[in-house]
Image (cartoon, rainbow, N blue to C red):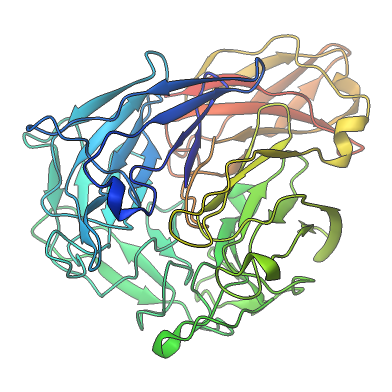
Length: 460
């Protein structure tokens, strides 16, 4: 239900009580998958002050700059659901949980977003009394109590898809978990102090606006273009979530008055879908169904969107139907791992499946050396024997995803200044909002669109 790519190259899966009320406050495991070795290691759950497991089912998450995964919120109770105020971090090196100060109130199905400052913004989700938490807050180690809250905002829906913009503002795309909250796509401007309110500016033009339920959205590559695409989704007006859309819209957030405009539609209508940015600068879409949690209506063929041509291409079929609580994420070698699926309570899909894009069968460029750490505005050198044939250098932030929502993934262009036969001279952006501090996968991609295997580098 929750998946994150760690900077060790391993994949972290967790689900808390896993949509099973009988498992609330009972021991459960989380798992780290070593992709290269094909092994799994299990971790005990984090415990509260009474030594009871903290239930991370339907929490939110994003990476801190040093690579720890912040996980906040979760489940206090089922039916009705109450949100937990708990916060903790998962350490990729020790592979253990580290408890942090709790939020000011509970959040179930919250959204977390890492800011250019490295601080973490939290929005929405039912609170510890089951009421929608309308008070955003920010975590920083510099705060005495960890979290500081703003005055209340509009009623943003749970798992609101959020994107950090180059200006430092935040964009809500219109995709979320559950039915429409009545909040249109919105640009949020954070004030200078916590006593001031966040300002909101509506972005018009979204087609099928009531179909945001388990839609997904991505910041199209490269991040410098500031274009967000919303894809698919289900209708949940009046509790009716039995229909889906193949709608695709794009908004240019660099425009003075941003407005969504139609793009080429998906070949298959779907909700509960996943979207993954590939290092060839296309968007891979898989998972989901055209009928809510009905796996018999699953959309097994995957599709790839090419922003350069505004076209969708149907590619391989999945073997495993994946609906609610399914995930997909990019691996450092350029493949995509898919997992999960929970069509009904206590019914869990535990098989993993990996998609290999067509470029995996092509001769691939090789990064022979590159810096392990980077700073903003840095000019640096990448050693590669294929330097003469390299089209792009890209930094891709590792994914941390759940419920069709991922605030982490972004592809940052690293412009090539010059080259010789064996090296590339490139310059990194000096804008922390374009590339928030943290760990990234560094890819080079040749003129045929074939990427290298990534090397890891830390930006701070």
